[in-house]
Image 1 (spheres, rainbow, N blue to C red):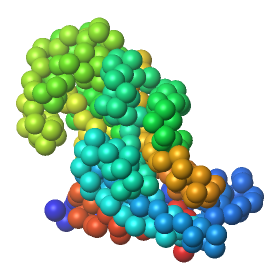
Image 2: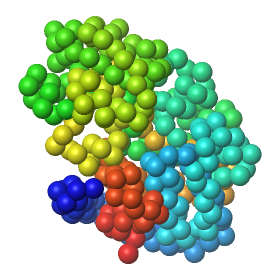
Image 3: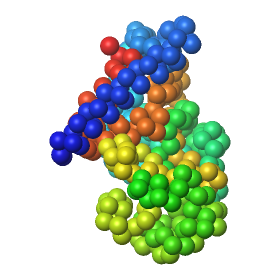
Image 4: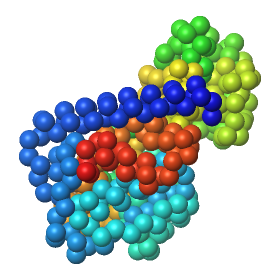
Length: 327
């Protein structure tokens, strides 16, 4: 990593910490009461001795964002007084769900769009773009299987149309709708399954009425490379990609202004009996510590792991401290 990149990352991290602390402190001022083990938004988590009778095993799927989330939830629940074990980096959503149903873990973070399409056979185009509606549908389906889900994160990890900032400035692009009348001259790259996905080529063509000069499948690891090399004018990115924080002046994502792409907010899925045994601090703590996870914050946390090569456990601890949740 170059000196220039290091300096930019250090400055961004410092600004990130300041904004996070000020924003969450403001939330805490509105709440007044510190309340039990979970506490109020932006306030330090208070350990509840009663929670020490309960052991929770927190799982996650097998990529950076999931592991960071698993660490955040685990460390927060420990601060609330629970005994916590971790089984992170389990594998795919199918592996994680089986671990939950088999009692190997107490809960894990999942995406509403993934839950509805992978577990409950909802067609991608039928997944709500509204985060609350997607959460309610997911929770209803999980409850039929003896599971439950806690409310969603502010951020959504989803597909998005990305481009170089220089391209966006040149063409006046802010929203996907701004591509109308321009897309026919632009090349689009995306994952091989993009041709069949509503949150990719299908949604752009059918939902927005766009036609592109060409579409080229590309390996997920090359989505930014094709932009850098000028092969692609547009590329399907993820909203929480580390590169968007590390190179925030280089890349931009276009807003899904017609809300075509499905909601990809995170919900913590757990066993109903575990939730009852764990008591109210279980859900309260999880929803409290994820309240500061905006799209920019999650990008930065992912970047600290993927770009800065910090350990996920350390990144989670930094977030909890910078947010004022732990001392």
